[in-house]
Length: 73
Image (cartoon, rainbow, N blue to C red):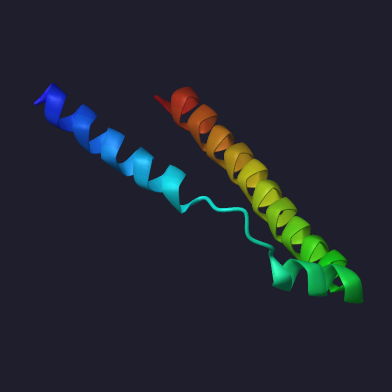
């Protein structure tokens, strides 16, 4: 079973290496030239920060609920 898994992983990784060619990324170049790439980066950063803030607030609420549950029991 271990040999089968290792063979499968080897096949997948070799296909990934073959698929990596040095090709130009035209869309990124066009967006960089027109300045739109900064808007994309800003939106992605805003989404990421929103998710992080949500997780922090959720962790605080869960921690408070755990403390309240431990104090009652």
